[in-house]
Image (cartoon, rainbow, N blue to C red; front, side):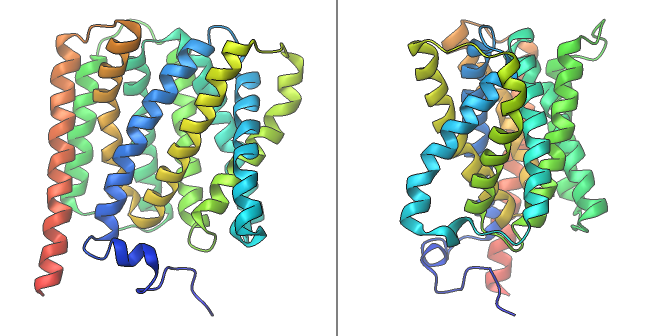
Length: 307
């Protein structure tokens, strides 16, 4: 049976021949983390003016329109799927995750949203180990634990009340984790481009009936920002999907903790939010875990080459 994996002589492998799949996956995961924070900043502004299901539908619909020219040029084979059932389930969980995320964005500070969202990494890593059978190296667990500690420094244990916004983010994180596990399974057969298209397609289709109940025609300025949101989201989905395909989830999930750093920077630039001491300390802890795991993967690649 033919494999869907890229051949050693394929263009992408020739370009990346000096790097392991895990190392490339780490780089894509880091870029995805930045794009997600930019997404959050745009969504935070739009979420104050639009219902989350309406925003979710329009964004996904524009993404599908963006992808259509690529589909026409590449042919239907680019989005052909052998996992149509899993693609639908993935779209459903992704739609729920995004809707809860858009609802929480205007109700919580960007750094708190980012920190609470890190529960998705714990859900995903545990799910990958127990349901996908991925190996769990002790140092990978260590990097994840250090990242969690950094997030806890920012959130600070002992917060008085758990708001509805935090509960929405926890639900969103769980749905995002399920989606990542499904993507890992789907990309064993289907191409990552197929996942990006069908994910946007099903989100648009599933969100549409609910969006009708809250419909209000966006202004020209809102449409411009929604288009920007769709572009950034598309880029993020490609980066995230390829990183999941190339690397073990237990390896790339700790990279998501860099979102704390990006959230502090973007929040300061766009919302004039000055990061507090806890954010800076937590960000430093997170950065140390990312640098460590990247160096270990690089060294692992060198050891394999020498062996």
